[in-house]
Amino acid sequence: MKVIASSLRKGNVVELDGKLYVVLSAQNFHPGKGTPTTSVDMRRISDGVKVSERWKTTDQVEKATVDEREYDFLYEDAEGFHFMQPETYDQITVPADVVGDGKVYLQEGMRVFLKTHEGVAIAIEYPQKITVEIAETEPVVKGQTASSSYKPALCTNGLRVMVPPHISAGTRIVISTDDNSYVERAKD
Image (cartoon, rainbow, N blue to C red; front, side, top):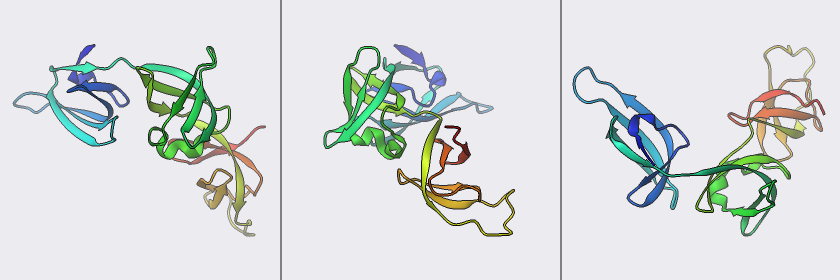
């Protein structure tokens, strides 16, 4: 489906010269004189190469039809990461390069949004907040003010986060997947 270049947003999938690209960022420029343009940074899905393109804002760009559905994470093995569609029980294997650095967030049974194109996984969207368990952290120092001081902690999934002084090893906490920041103590 053709769309105008100025409507492209992060996460859109664009078809260019027979290859698929996922949009990393898109900016519209409106100079005082001359033609307004849209500058787009993209990653080629087939090999991960980053590409920058510039179009007139009114140029037509081919937006690929992407199927976005919820999937449950099952397990990881040598083939990759295995997910299952909850309604149909269809399973899909996602290669490690598509999952990328986000693999530390994956927990058994976790629900994620998987974007597929013609049955091939091209992008994955994690929940905004996940619950993790603290494996180890420094002991609390007496006299340390609780308001603004955070201490480093290591989670059981290998993630390093900064937590308030009252959090100890074995505590389950909620973190934001955007920047790995501490949100709150888990309520479970």
